[in-house]
Image (cartoon, rainbow over the protein chains, first blue to last red):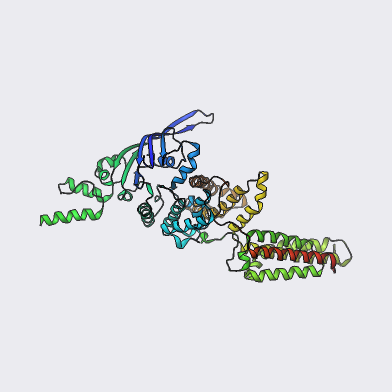
Length: 287
Length: 270
């Protein structure tokens, strides 16, 4: 069994009026099946309201399934006694960096998670130092979070999760409020954690550029998993992606258009370098 | 700019007073305040003066930072001095029109002014040498016994430290909303008091909505990091008494004893 396994997971947001009668039911997750292996880097794509954040909150036991089940590292999230161990196994980083930093000093914030799970003082210091080093923020340890840039704050938030030594980290649109530089910093940090520490990463995003290096991409639409596969497999279906209102990277669109007009370019080109390589090859044959 | 404001008035320096446990400083300030209001006689006043000067010197905080605190209470001091001066019954010293200044009144006025000045100077040493977070920690630990009778000490301390963290963020947000509303034609500066208060509504409503949203997000982020109240929680920076803290307690108690002795045996000329 993988580290995260969902079976026919359903979640409904039920809106009630003042008397408690059901006004409307919105199905955010619709019979989702998922199996994530330890050490994978998974990207979940989807436009607003596709249910991707709802799925993320289930992995951290912040929301409970309406139907179906979800196991994190073999623990059933719907059992009350599993909530804390699940949250310790699967850490979560949220969208707004300001609203998830609790302390007024960087190192104290990183220490917040270990404090909560009762780690002895000496070990907290050790963990704080290691985690700040892992995200490259060690020299800011005595700073106030208010003076950091968005990307730096988000890295502090990641360090705060890393300090709890989770097996899996869920990043829920961590780059939505950042500038392009901050976005790169955060994605690079996530990849480093995945490679060096073997942490399973689940990256939720709607920026296509961020998912190219993932091991596996999952596309969600209206609460359902609609596509699954390697980035190359996903991006070779430009037409389908557009149907799900996702922005395909410009270079992939260009490659696709060139292919349609008769050039010998394969499906699912992901990077600029790749496309230039193909074009140079064709140019040489032509000459 | 706004994001640079520091809360309270912490003055960073490397002194023994800065390094003291916040609980020592809280306790000492309390003892000091009590001593100010129970001293009698010139000897006790001198003791308090010497003690205050010695503490100010060891704290390495420039004197002008403490005087800042005094400016805020000048009016209060003038009013109390005036009341004491004119309204104390006793032997008249000078009298003109309906006012009479008595010897006791003059004495009380001077004493009260000295007490208030010393009070402000003494307490500002505490706020200048302790960060708000240390103070919160100190309060939490000192008040811990109250949790046995059902006072949520940990929760209160947590709320205080979160409030401290969010004040600069909310100030920045206020600034942003104000500019956005001004760009839409809102007027925050003209009109009489009532109108100005009314004009604040387009500022306050979005500010509150956003504050609640932030609170919601923060609560979720705290839960996601296994926050479960104070139980079973360890501390990254636990408070430990060290040799210097014990020594400080001794010094403060010694000071208090001297003041009490002076009050009992040398209560003149007051």
